[in-house]
Length: 269
Image (cartoon, rainbow, N blue to C red; front, side, top):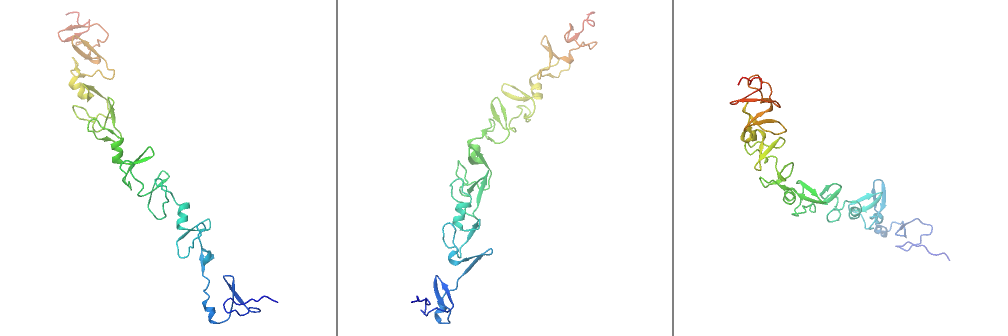
């Protein structure tokens, strides 16, 4: 006896008749009302590829993607959550996924949620403000200056760039001035007296001895040489015979009141 093969709905025999399969069950193609209850198969397509509705699922979690946002990777369908967990950036601070479309901060290959990118000291979000990295931590500028920057010995404010060291103490360039004329000393020669810094001009005018011949200061700085005799001083170039102007450096000489003379000019004294 031959096994019966009937329509799953109306139970009529399908031998010698056309039929369709629906969920592995055969249905006849008659025009009876029961045919209207068969739901049409939904064709889902994306970039010239097609899926049954029941097959349109996330490759990893197997959840349906019908009417849901999705992404693709290596031709595999992925829901937004699985794609983000697998391929999106991870926050350097909290280690959680930075979801696509959310705002993130990046620095030297690392990424942060905007709310996780905070100053290590005050814990406030840095956002788009300037910051300074130190020892694998990030600091806003005010916190970095309070914690790490040297303070100027003159104005007591942080030195963030440049600066001058004098007697092992830090100064702003704008604060390191000549005690007398208040000109900036950074980048030029200077000297000191009683721990106060002076430019060369002011130091010479205030403290240097004066040449007995030209009356200008004798600084004695930078290896310059001078002649000293009986509490009087001369520049080397000024130590000349009063009469014939020959240099007396390294030679014998005579004096006549405030003048100095070579032996030849002074023989008649």
